[in-house]
Length: 258
Length: 310
Image 1 (tube, rainbow over the protein chains, first blue to last red):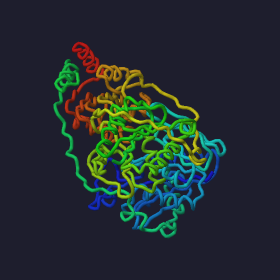
Image 2: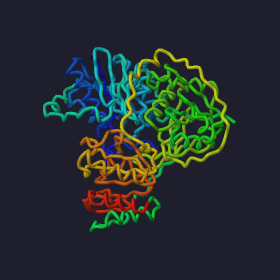
Image 3: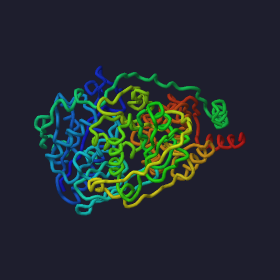
Image 4: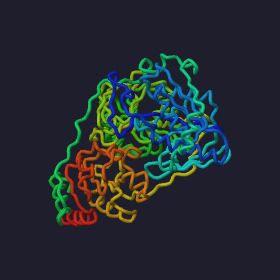
């Protein structure tokens, strides 16, 4: 099975995150990491390859610095990577990013596309369905379990109420939550091997996407204002000496919750 | 006055009433309901019109048919805006709609002005942005607990839509829908009070303590990632970066250290209280009231005290 995993480099959510002067996500001065949920997508792809054979390709759209996350992804075991990078992509919205991903995916002929259910920077959760719509393939999103039987895919999809069992035939896109597996740690051998794995760099021109459709120029939405919220500050803290529960309820009562 | 479409995916929820309330500021409110419409409730909150779509073609497949139905309606009635809930499915319908209409979209709005300017909390609630769709009409998903629903009586006219979906919309079949435990508790993202347990709860059985306090307060139960990863509580109740974002009036954190991963999902809560045995736990930096102590002593005592006061 020819599997493509979508990998995004994001600012570390454990560190300070800001918007730049042009209100795009500040990626230049951020500490950047591979989007955590994407590691689960990679793991799932590798498990399918191990069970059914095939090839795993990492696909990333991002600035030059995203190479770091691509190598990290490859160190887990995928065979190769495609990196779409172009200065004109700076400031792209989800719609434009999906169009670029779709253009790249058309060149890769994937049977199965796997992505994380969301990225930690935008948390928008829209790209998998946008790609399904653009490519005309099936979408099985929010997976907590994926079963592959020939070309038939079955997914347990997490919902607010419980779960749904959904099925489709390949070609398809599956997005996964972090409950689906436990991603492997890259081995030393994997890290060394990743340095030699092919990473193909593609520009918008290579994909036949015009610069005006993407980036700030082609954005379908715009940030008008940005302000940091004042940080929360801790209030009263009592040490339980036998009446901690009562003191807690007394506080809740003054706030009219009890 | 142009119509504003409010998409109702799965029964009328609190967020539906919030959307109807917001939509009234943008135009004449029309609800698009999949399945049976609660005409009385939708009318009570100002729906002038209700479009319904149902049947196997809508129910039997994942998301895509619903997006097609909404897209066809948008082309016909040329609404001023489309509002959807910031749920998994709401966002997915919005995603497909944006592509079908070659239109922008905004997700997770906590406010929407009459001119279509949305307010969003970003980076784990640490910053606020105001944004606008600049291509096409505003397609905006609204996060639960954004506004207080306000009734405004209307008598909606109901129109049943003809559902015409393509084969591409029917690529992903829904074989089974399984409801898991929740009982009579409010839905996590919509609840006014959320009581969450973390690693400190110790095991799945002990979560009864968290549930008991939640029930006494009339709240929903949440769990930290550590608790979910340890198998104490199901994933759909996970609060945090890889789970749900909640913004209740009161958030009670029991045995939760307050790692950034968890804070990302709850730090816009109005009031936060915490019980943790570690006085240095970062959750106390957020908590309006904190008890440093053993939750197995503090929580049962608190539960007794609430019963006494009732």
